[in-house]
Amino acid sequence: MVLEVSKTLSIPAAELSWRFSRSSGPGGQHVNTSDSRVELSWDIAHSEVLTDVQRERVLDRLDSRLIAGVLTIASSTQRSQLRNREIALEKLAELIVLALAPGPAKRRATKPTRGSVKRRLAAKGRRSETKKQRQRPSSD
Image (cartoon, one colour):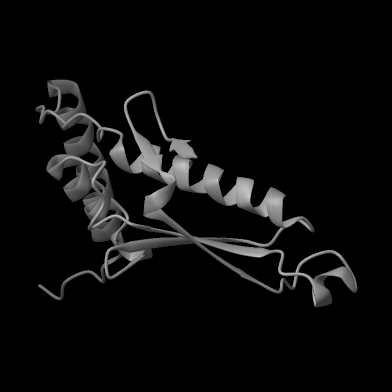
């Protein structure tokens, strides 16, 4: 089994580890007797499918979700363990695609237009005049 993250990236099943436990989600008495909660872990720091650049980007962007370079995703929304496994795989693929996506283009600094500078200064002048009108007249 291989997780297809994108056209260029596939994670082999050998790099994924699963843990199962009892869920607190929907299912009534069923959840008290079956291990339907799923935890999917992927060791990004030691993964062989990522290039060094990809690894650096993923580790940087998912830093708050990682513990010692391992990304863990839990799913317990469904009664079925199989469905929770599918959901966990989808979540992992989505996170990795977002983490590998290029960032937004750098903002090019621009000067304010002459008109906007003029309007800003006029507004400052009006505000200054309003505040001067509130002051107590001087005793001179």
